[in-house]
Length: 385
Image 1 (cartoon, rainbow, N blue to C red):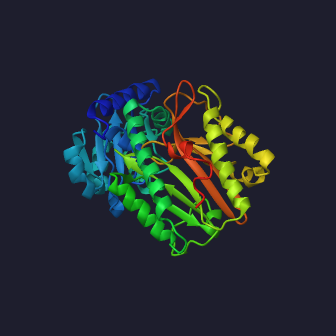
Image 2 (cartoon, rainbow, N blue to C red):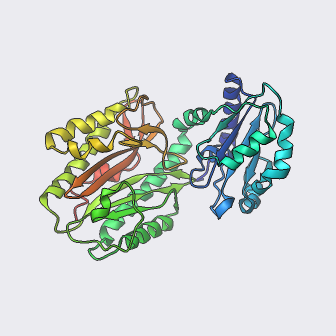
Protein backbone atom coordinates (compact mmCIF):
# COMPACT_ATOMS: atom_id res chain seq x y z
CA UNK A 1 0.00 0.00 0.00
CA UNK A 2 1.12 3.54 -0.72
CA UNK A 3 0.95 4.75 2.87
CA UNK A 4 3.02 4.75 6.04
CA UNK A 5 1.20 2.39 8.39
CA UNK A 6 0.03 3.19 11.90
CA UNK A 7 2.74 1.07 13.47
CA UNK A 8 5.51 3.21 11.94
CA UNK A 9 3.72 6.46 12.84
CA UNK A 10 3.41 5.38 16.48
CA UNK A 11 7.02 4.28 16.56
CA UNK A 12 8.07 7.78 15.44
CA UNK A 13 6.07 9.37 18.23
CA UNK A 14 7.58 7.08 20.87
CA UNK A 15 11.04 7.97 19.60
CA UNK A 16 10.10 11.65 19.91
CA UNK A 17 8.98 11.09 23.53
CA UNK A 18 12.42 9.74 24.38
CA UNK A 19 14.18 12.62 22.70
CA UNK A 20 12.18 15.35 24.43
CA UNK A 21 12.83 13.62 27.75
CA UNK A 22 16.57 13.64 26.99
CA UNK A 23 16.31 17.35 26.17
CA UNK A 24 14.61 18.03 29.54
CA UNK A 25 11.38 19.13 27.89
CA UNK A 26 7.93 18.61 29.37
CA UNK A 27 6.37 18.38 25.94
CA UNK A 28 6.51 19.60 22.38
CA UNK A 29 4.18 21.62 20.14
CA UNK A 30 4.56 20.93 16.41
CA UNK A 31 3.11 23.19 13.74
CA UNK A 32 2.80 22.77 9.97
CA UNK A 33 0.57 23.91 7.14
CA UNK A 34 -0.68 22.29 3.94
CA UNK A 35 2.16 23.47 1.73
CA UNK A 36 4.83 22.36 4.19
CA UNK A 37 2.91 19.75 6.13
CA UNK A 38 5.86 17.49 6.85
CA UNK A 39 6.42 18.24 10.54
CA UNK A 40 2.93 17.06 11.54
CA UNK A 41 2.25 14.63 8.68
CA UNK A 42 5.37 12.76 9.80
CA UNK A 43 3.43 11.68 12.91
CA UNK A 44 -0.21 11.85 11.81
CA UNK A 45 0.00 10.42 8.29
CA UNK A 46 -2.51 13.11 7.29
CA UNK A 47 -1.97 15.90 4.77
CA UNK A 48 -4.69 18.57 4.89
CA UNK A 49 -6.16 19.93 1.71
CA UNK A 50 -5.83 23.69 1.38
CA UNK A 51 -9.22 25.33 1.72
CA UNK A 52 -7.87 28.75 2.72
CA UNK A 53 -7.60 28.88 6.53
CA UNK A 54 -8.35 25.19 7.00
CA UNK A 55 -4.90 23.77 6.30
CA UNK A 56 -2.92 24.06 9.58
CA UNK A 57 -2.01 21.15 11.81
CA UNK A 58 -0.80 21.61 15.39
CA UNK A 59 0.28 18.51 17.28
CA UNK A 60 0.68 18.55 21.08
CA UNK A 61 2.71 15.87 22.82
CA UNK A 62 2.89 16.34 26.59
CA UNK A 63 4.87 14.05 28.84
CA UNK A 64 2.91 11.03 30.08
CA UNK A 65 -0.16 12.02 28.03
CA UNK A 66 -1.70 10.88 24.77
CA UNK A 67 -1.07 13.27 21.88
CA UNK A 68 -3.77 15.58 20.61
CA UNK A 69 -4.10 17.20 17.22
CA UNK A 70 -5.65 20.52 16.27
CA UNK A 71 -6.70 20.77 12.64
CA UNK A 72 -8.71 23.04 10.34
CA UNK A 73 -12.48 22.77 10.54
CA UNK A 74 -13.15 21.33 7.07
CA UNK A 75 -10.24 18.87 7.32
CA UNK A 76 -11.38 17.89 10.81
CA UNK A 77 -14.09 15.49 9.64
CA UNK A 78 -11.86 13.34 7.44
CA UNK A 79 -9.00 13.51 9.94
CA UNK A 80 -11.34 12.31 12.69
CA UNK A 81 -12.01 9.12 10.74
CA UNK A 82 -8.57 8.46 9.26
CA UNK A 83 -5.89 9.67 11.72
CA UNK A 84 -4.73 7.19 14.35
CA UNK A 85 -4.62 9.93 17.03
CA UNK A 86 -8.00 9.88 18.78
CA UNK A 87 -8.10 13.33 20.35
CA UNK A 88 -8.63 15.76 17.45
CA UNK A 89 -9.83 19.33 17.90
CA UNK A 90 -10.84 22.12 15.52
CA UNK A 91 -8.39 24.92 14.81
CA UNK A 92 -10.93 27.74 14.88
CA UNK A 93 -11.57 26.95 18.57
CA UNK A 94 -8.00 27.86 19.56
CA UNK A 95 -8.89 31.24 21.00
CA UNK A 96 -11.52 29.92 23.40
CA UNK A 97 -11.94 26.22 24.20
CA UNK A 98 -8.39 25.11 23.36
CA UNK A 99 -6.81 28.16 24.97
CA UNK A 100 -8.73 27.45 28.18
CA UNK A 101 -7.72 23.78 28.18
CA UNK A 102 -4.04 24.69 27.77
CA UNK A 103 -4.06 26.76 30.96
CA UNK A 104 -3.67 23.61 33.06
CA UNK A 105 -0.10 23.33 31.75
CA UNK A 106 0.83 26.82 32.93
CA UNK A 107 3.47 26.09 35.55
CA UNK A 108 6.75 27.84 36.28
CA UNK A 109 9.74 25.81 35.20
CA UNK A 110 7.76 23.92 32.55
CA UNK A 111 9.41 23.75 29.12
CA UNK A 112 7.37 23.06 25.99
CA UNK A 113 9.47 22.94 22.84
CA UNK A 114 8.13 24.43 19.63
CA UNK A 115 8.92 22.82 16.27
CA UNK A 116 7.98 24.48 13.00
CA UNK A 117 8.19 27.95 14.53
CA UNK A 118 9.17 29.44 11.15
CA UNK A 119 5.78 28.36 9.81
CA UNK A 120 3.71 29.22 12.86
CA UNK A 121 1.68 32.45 12.56
CA UNK A 122 2.18 35.16 15.19
CA UNK A 123 -1.43 34.98 16.36
CA UNK A 124 -1.03 31.31 17.30
CA UNK A 125 2.20 31.95 19.15
CA UNK A 126 0.39 34.74 21.03
CA UNK A 127 -2.45 32.37 21.97
CA UNK A 128 0.04 29.87 23.39
CA UNK A 129 1.93 32.45 25.45
CA UNK A 130 -1.32 34.01 26.67
CA UNK A 131 -2.66 30.64 27.84
CA UNK A 132 0.67 29.61 29.42
CA UNK A 133 2.55 32.81 30.40
CA UNK A 134 4.79 31.04 32.92
CA UNK A 135 5.97 28.35 30.48
CA UNK A 136 9.25 28.47 28.52
CA UNK A 137 8.98 27.77 24.79
CA UNK A 138 12.44 26.84 23.45
CA UNK A 139 12.70 26.36 19.68
CA UNK A 140 13.46 22.69 18.96
CA UNK A 141 12.73 22.30 15.24
CA UNK A 142 16.14 20.64 14.93
CA UNK A 143 14.73 17.57 16.71
CA UNK A 144 12.28 16.93 13.88
CA UNK A 145 14.75 17.88 11.16
CA UNK A 146 17.19 15.29 12.50
CA UNK A 147 14.49 12.60 12.74
CA UNK A 148 13.30 13.21 9.20
CA UNK A 149 16.75 13.25 7.56
CA UNK A 150 17.13 9.48 7.76
CA UNK A 151 14.37 7.66 5.88
CA UNK A 152 12.82 4.27 6.54
CA UNK A 153 12.60 1.60 3.84
CA UNK A 154 8.93 2.42 3.30
CA UNK A 155 9.62 6.13 2.91
CA UNK A 156 12.26 5.44 0.27
CA UNK A 157 9.91 3.01 -1.50
CA UNK A 158 7.24 5.72 -1.80
CA UNK A 159 9.78 8.28 -2.96
CA UNK A 160 11.06 5.93 -5.62
CA UNK A 161 7.52 5.45 -6.95
CA UNK A 162 7.13 9.23 -7.14
CA UNK A 163 10.48 9.45 -8.96
CA UNK A 164 9.34 6.85 -11.51
CA UNK A 165 6.28 8.97 -12.26
CA UNK A 166 8.43 12.07 -12.65
CA UNK A 167 10.63 10.22 -15.14
CA UNK A 168 7.57 9.06 -17.09
CA UNK A 169 6.09 12.55 -17.20
CA UNK A 170 9.33 14.14 -18.46
CA UNK A 171 9.68 11.38 -21.07
CA UNK A 172 6.15 12.05 -22.34
CA UNK A 173 6.66 15.81 -22.29
CA UNK A 174 9.57 15.43 -24.69
CA UNK A 175 7.12 14.02 -27.26
CA UNK A 176 4.54 16.77 -26.67
CA UNK A 177 6.55 19.99 -26.39
CA UNK A 178 6.52 22.10 -29.54
CA UNK A 179 7.40 25.62 -30.62
CA UNK A 180 4.30 27.80 -30.19
CA UNK A 181 2.97 26.07 -27.05
CA UNK A 182 2.63 28.25 -23.96
CA UNK A 183 4.28 27.70 -20.61
CA UNK A 184 0.82 27.12 -19.11
CA UNK A 185 0.09 24.40 -21.64
CA UNK A 186 3.28 22.59 -20.66
CA UNK A 187 2.21 22.79 -17.00
CA UNK A 188 -1.23 21.42 -17.93
CA UNK A 189 0.31 18.40 -19.68
CA UNK A 190 2.72 17.71 -16.81
CA UNK A 191 0.06 17.93 -14.10
CA UNK A 192 -2.44 15.86 -16.09
CA UNK A 193 0.09 13.13 -16.87
CA UNK A 194 1.26 12.98 -13.26
CA UNK A 195 -2.24 12.72 -11.83
CA UNK A 196 -3.22 10.19 -14.49
CA UNK A 197 -0.35 8.03 -13.26
CA UNK A 198 -1.66 8.26 -9.68
CA UNK A 199 0.41 11.07 -8.21
CA UNK A 200 -0.56 14.08 -6.17
CA UNK A 201 1.52 17.26 -6.47
CA UNK A 202 4.01 18.25 -3.80
CA UNK A 203 4.22 21.82 -5.05
CA UNK A 204 3.33 23.94 -8.04
CA UNK A 205 4.89 22.75 -11.29
CA UNK A 206 7.51 25.24 -12.44
CA UNK A 207 7.77 25.78 -16.18
CA UNK A 208 9.79 28.67 -17.55
CA UNK A 209 11.15 29.36 -20.99
CA UNK A 210 13.54 31.73 -22.70
CA UNK A 211 14.22 34.89 -20.75
CA UNK A 212 12.12 33.55 -17.84
CA UNK A 213 14.69 30.82 -17.18
CA UNK A 214 16.99 33.44 -15.68
CA UNK A 215 14.80 33.31 -12.54
CA UNK A 216 15.11 30.58 -9.87
CA UNK A 217 11.33 30.11 -10.05
CA UNK A 218 8.54 31.44 -12.21
CA UNK A 219 4.76 31.16 -12.42
CA UNK A 220 3.93 29.79 -15.86
CA UNK A 221 2.49 32.38 -18.22
CA UNK A 222 0.95 32.69 -21.66
CA UNK A 223 4.43 33.17 -23.09
CA UNK A 224 4.91 30.96 -26.15
CA UNK A 225 7.90 28.68 -26.61
CA UNK A 226 10.24 29.96 -29.28
CA UNK A 227 12.95 28.39 -31.42
CA UNK A 228 16.33 27.97 -29.77
CA UNK A 229 15.08 28.64 -26.24
CA UNK A 230 15.80 26.75 -23.05
CA UNK A 231 12.69 25.34 -21.37
CA UNK A 232 13.03 24.43 -17.69
CA UNK A 233 10.55 21.95 -16.16
CA UNK A 234 10.63 21.35 -12.40
CA UNK A 235 7.94 18.78 -11.54
CA UNK A 236 7.21 17.46 -8.03
CA UNK A 237 4.84 14.46 -7.87
CA UNK A 238 4.05 12.70 -4.59
CA UNK A 239 3.00 9.19 -3.63
CA UNK A 240 1.65 8.60 -0.13
CA UNK A 241 2.59 12.25 0.61
CA UNK A 242 6.27 11.53 -0.20
CA UNK A 243 7.77 13.81 -2.82
CA UNK A 244 10.06 13.76 -5.76
CA UNK A 245 11.87 16.86 -6.99
CA UNK A 246 13.26 16.02 -10.40
CA UNK A 247 13.74 18.53 -13.15
CA UNK A 248 15.25 18.82 -16.59
CA UNK A 249 15.77 21.55 -19.12
CA UNK A 250 14.74 20.99 -22.72
CA UNK A 251 16.31 22.89 -25.59
CA UNK A 252 13.98 23.93 -28.38
CA UNK A 253 15.00 23.29 -32.02
CA UNK A 254 17.25 25.82 -33.67
CA UNK A 255 19.43 26.55 -30.64
CA UNK A 256 23.00 27.77 -30.72
CA UNK A 257 25.88 25.35 -30.33
CA UNK A 258 26.81 27.19 -27.12
CA UNK A 259 23.49 26.27 -25.47
CA UNK A 260 23.71 22.71 -26.80
CA UNK A 261 27.18 22.26 -25.32
CA UNK A 262 26.08 23.76 -21.98
CA UNK A 263 23.15 21.35 -21.70
CA UNK A 264 25.17 18.32 -22.77
CA UNK A 265 27.91 19.15 -20.27
CA UNK A 266 25.34 19.72 -17.51
CA UNK A 267 23.99 16.19 -17.93
CA UNK A 268 27.50 14.77 -17.97
CA UNK A 269 28.54 16.71 -14.88
CA UNK A 270 25.41 15.78 -12.91
CA UNK A 271 25.96 12.07 -13.63
CA UNK A 272 29.61 12.17 -12.66
CA UNK A 273 28.93 14.20 -9.52
CA UNK A 274 26.26 11.77 -8.31
CA UNK A 275 28.58 8.85 -9.04
CA UNK A 276 31.29 10.54 -6.95
CA UNK A 277 29.18 10.91 -3.79
CA UNK A 278 30.38 8.78 -0.90
CA UNK A 279 28.76 8.03 2.44
CA UNK A 280 30.42 9.56 5.52
CA UNK A 281 31.86 12.44 3.48
CA UNK A 282 31.16 16.16 3.62
CA UNK A 283 28.20 17.50 1.68
CA UNK A 284 30.41 20.23 0.21
CA UNK A 285 31.84 17.50 -2.05
CA UNK A 286 28.85 18.09 -4.39
CA UNK A 287 29.72 21.75 -4.86
CA UNK A 288 33.41 20.93 -5.20
CA UNK A 289 32.81 18.32 -7.90
CA UNK A 290 30.53 20.66 -9.86
CA UNK A 291 33.17 23.41 -9.62
CA UNK A 292 36.01 21.10 -10.61
CA UNK A 293 34.23 19.99 -13.79
CA UNK A 294 32.75 23.36 -14.77
CA UNK A 295 35.96 25.40 -14.47
CA UNK A 296 37.86 23.96 -17.48
CA UNK A 297 34.69 24.41 -19.58
CA UNK A 298 34.60 28.10 -18.58
CA UNK A 299 31.11 27.56 -17.16
CA UNK A 300 32.10 28.14 -13.55
CA UNK A 301 31.14 31.88 -13.67
CA UNK A 302 27.64 30.77 -14.67
CA UNK A 303 27.48 28.61 -11.52
CA UNK A 304 29.35 30.10 -8.55
CA UNK A 305 27.26 33.26 -7.98
CA UNK A 306 24.16 31.11 -7.45
CA UNK A 307 25.38 28.52 -4.92
CA UNK A 308 26.21 30.62 -1.87
CA UNK A 309 22.63 30.82 -0.62
CA UNK A 310 19.84 28.42 0.23
CA UNK A 311 19.57 25.23 -1.85
CA UNK A 312 22.47 26.21 -4.07
CA UNK A 313 23.25 22.64 -5.13
CA UNK A 314 20.26 20.82 -3.65
CA UNK A 315 18.35 19.96 -0.50
CA UNK A 316 16.66 17.22 1.44
CA UNK A 317 13.45 15.73 0.04
CA UNK A 318 10.76 13.70 1.79
CA UNK A 319 7.30 14.64 3.01
CA UNK A 320 8.10 18.14 1.76
CA UNK A 321 9.58 18.89 -1.64
CA UNK A 322 12.21 20.98 0.13
CA UNK A 323 13.30 20.01 3.62
CA UNK A 324 16.43 19.85 5.73
CA UNK A 325 19.35 19.54 5.15
CA UNK A 326 20.32 22.35 2.82
CA UNK A 327 22.91 21.56 0.17
CA UNK A 328 25.10 24.48 -0.88
CA UNK A 329 28.65 25.74 -1.05
CA UNK A 330 28.94 25.92 2.75
CA UNK A 331 27.00 22.81 3.87
CA UNK A 332 28.70 21.43 6.96
CA UNK A 333 26.81 18.15 7.35
CA UNK A 334 27.96 14.66 6.41
CA UNK A 335 26.20 12.23 4.07
CA UNK A 336 24.73 9.24 5.89
CA UNK A 337 22.94 6.18 4.48
CA UNK A 338 19.18 6.60 3.89
CA UNK A 339 19.35 10.36 3.46
CA UNK A 340 17.38 11.42 0.38
CA UNK A 341 18.58 14.54 -1.42
CA UNK A 342 17.82 16.45 -4.58
CA UNK A 343 21.14 17.17 -6.29
CA UNK A 344 20.90 19.99 -8.81
CA UNK A 345 23.08 21.92 -11.17
CA UNK A 346 21.88 25.40 -12.13
CA UNK A 347 23.63 27.53 -14.71
CA UNK A 348 22.60 31.08 -15.58
CA UNK A 349 23.44 33.82 -18.07
CA UNK A 350 23.70 31.37 -20.94
CA UNK A 351 22.97 33.89 -23.69
CA UNK A 352 20.57 35.53 -21.24
CA UNK A 353 18.94 32.26 -20.16
CA UNK A 354 19.42 29.49 -17.59
CA UNK A 355 19.12 25.74 -17.16
CA UNK A 356 18.63 23.20 -14.38
CA UNK A 357 19.21 19.47 -14.19
CA UNK A 358 18.11 17.87 -10.92
CA UNK A 359 17.45 14.43 -9.57
CA UNK A 360 16.80 12.82 -6.19
CA UNK A 361 19.22 10.28 -4.80
CA UNK A 362 19.35 7.98 -1.80
CA UNK A 363 22.64 7.91 0.07
CA UNK A 364 23.75 4.28 0.57
CA UNK A 365 26.69 2.62 2.28
CA UNK A 366 28.53 2.60 -1.05
CA UNK A 367 27.53 5.94 -2.57
CA UNK A 368 24.40 7.55 -4.03
CA UNK A 369 21.60 5.60 -5.70
CA UNK A 370 19.48 7.69 -8.08
CA UNK A 371 15.74 7.47 -7.42
CA UNK A 372 15.13 9.42 -10.63
CA UNK A 373 16.62 7.15 -13.29
CA UNK A 374 15.94 9.26 -16.38
CA UNK A 375 18.81 11.73 -16.15
CA UNK A 376 21.20 8.87 -15.32
CA UNK A 377 20.13 6.59 -18.17
CA UNK A 378 19.62 8.88 -21.16
CA UNK A 379 22.31 10.26 -23.42
CA UNK A 380 23.69 13.66 -22.52
CA UNK A 381 21.98 15.25 -25.52
CA UNK A 382 18.59 13.61 -24.83
CA UNK A 383 16.83 16.88 -23.89
CA UNK A 384 17.86 18.68 -27.09
CA UNK A 385 14.73 18.75 -29.28
